[in-house]
Length: 225
Image (cartoon, rainbow, N blue to C red):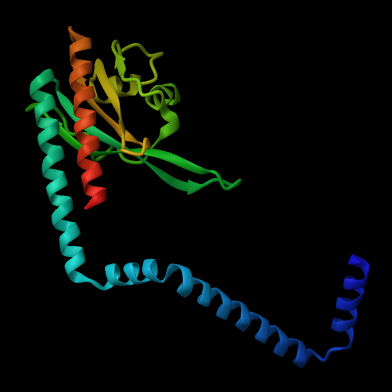
C-alpha cells in the first residue's frame, strides 16, 4: 500500500506540467489557510477578540499601568515593613524568567531583582542584579522548589555559592524564602541581606516567610485584575 501511494505521487510529479503543479500548490496552501482561519474563528474567536481589544485599547493600557503602580506601592510597603522587622541592610524581590533557547531547544533560565529597599548607607544593587543565570545557585533553587527558606551565613567563605554577594556587596548573611503563586508555581523569591552576622536567624526567617506570602497575594491580585 505505501509503495502504491509513492508510485502514484511520483507519477503525478512526472507527468504534471510545472505550471499546473504551482496552481495545485497554491490551492492546497489556500485551503490550509482557510481551514486554519475557520478553526480559530470557531473555537478561539473570543480570545482573539480579547487580544485585539487589549492591543488597541488605550484605556486598557491606562488601567493596567494604574494597577501595576498600585502593586508596586504594595510591594514597596512589604519590603519596608520587612526591613523594619529584621533590621536588615537590604530587602528585595527576585523573579524567575526564561532566556534564549539553547541549541537543543531547552531555554536558559534567569533570575532578576525587580524590587529593592535599602537602609541609608547601603549600596543599591538592583541595576546589576539583572538576568543572572538561575544555575548560579542550583542547590538554593532546589530548596525553593521544596518550599524551604534559605538561611545563609558566613558568605565570606569562598566555598559558599553566594560568596559573590560578599565579594561584590559586603553581604555576610542572607535569608531568602520562595514566592509561590496560588496555583503552586514558583514565581521568585524574597530576601533580606545583612552586612554582619545576625542573631535570631529563625525569627528573621519567619518574618521573611510571612513577607513572601504577602508578596504572593499581591502578585496574585495583579494577575486577577
